[in-house]
Length: 116
Ligand SMILES: [Zn+2]
Image (cartoon, rainbow, N blue to C red):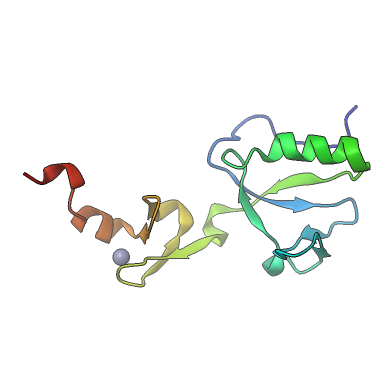
C-alpha cells in the first residue's frame, strides 16, 4: 500500500492542508519546508489546481515522507473582497485571475464583453 492516503472522490475544488505522520501541518514558509502543529500557520492548497496528489506521491517516493492531504472545512477558509473588503467564505468569493470579489461585487462587476 502506498503511504500517501488521499481521498479520490470529491477532489475537485477541495481545499486541503498537508499533514505529516506526526500530525504536523506543512507551514506557509516560502523559504523552506517546515511543519507546525499550529493549523492556523498551515498552508492551504487547492487540491485540484495544484496537483497535490501527484506532488505528494513524488515526495513519498523520493524521501519516504508519508504526507497526507487533509480536507479543510470550506467554512474555515475566508477571503476578503478586493473591492469592498467584505470577508466571506472562500467558496463564496470569486477570483477572476486578478482580484477577489464577493458575491455582491461580482454581480456589480461590468462584463468585459459588454463594451461596444
Ligand atoms: Zn465586495
